[in-house]
Length: 422
Image (cartoon, rainbow, N blue to C red; front, side, top):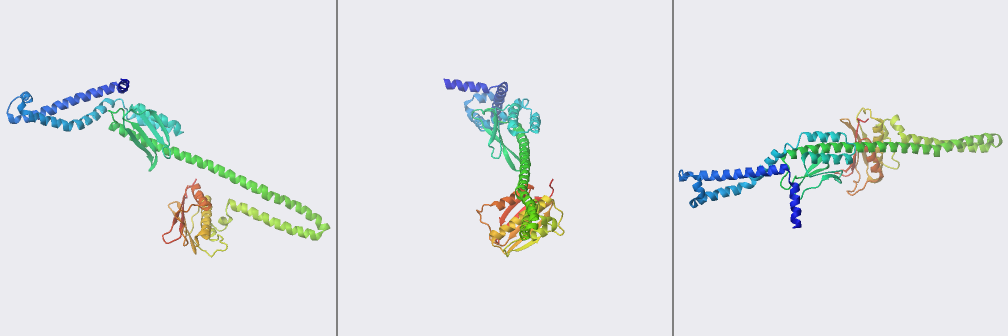
């Protein structure tokens, strides 16, 4: 009895004025349909028997085949007709309650003001549930839909419908809604408005994702810049500054020994010359770390041709457009560094005899290809620091990095960098 009372309470909760009206209208239409089909079969079947009234045929036992035909027609058609009438009645009864035109406008307004999906998505789920009178709406978003927000709870024995959230063929999550009740599924109009809502949400999530990526990139740029400044400051403070201070002390000592001990002064002058040579090399290293001087002295193509390969017999071939179009400074440095790293990888690992560096400019995109005729990398090869460095340099400028094994042996590194950079 207790279980029966719980079932009755749940059923009563599912009842609403709209549900009662829908059920009553559906029942009336089904009664009309049954009477119409039965009367039509009996009427059409009565023609061979003359003008005998239909009610006599209904009561006569000699004409039971007509009654049987009518029952068979109803048995074959009652289920699909009932489902069709159920959908149409729900559309007629509940369409005034569901403002399909207002819902996308409200969702669009909420998404336009979205700053944090974790705060906005619960509001969107609640809006969908309230506007469409749904008992359960859930939104899963994130890389694997691991973040989920929901409103309400799904009724028992109801189907959950899933609408994918995506943009530019990139999956971003899914929208999940339940039927109104076990006996009242979603209408075609509700399917359409939910698909449009899912599309709006997908676009908003994609924009939010790009915003996060841009913010992280900006933060990383600031961190990298400050780290570089700190490195240069430490190099100047710990390396160059003590050297300059020692030069001052050595010059003072040389001045003293010039009068008292000239041979010792000559020795100190030689030591001072060597220290100044090392200091000059340190200054050049600092300048080279900021921007390779050969890029300014020779240009990108000639600088790549002059990359030093000590102790290697590798033949280096460089091809590029003539004349080479002007490139942004950041792109020049990235291409030079990536090409240099790729060439040194060929020298160390490929056992190649020839390395080809090809630079092309295609539709405002610079394409760098470094290929060799040596040993291809293994399929299970894991990239080291060099490959990671090349990939990071390309990503910093919004480019792409890929490495492939050539069919005839050797390896090809390909980098694409956009030339329209802020």
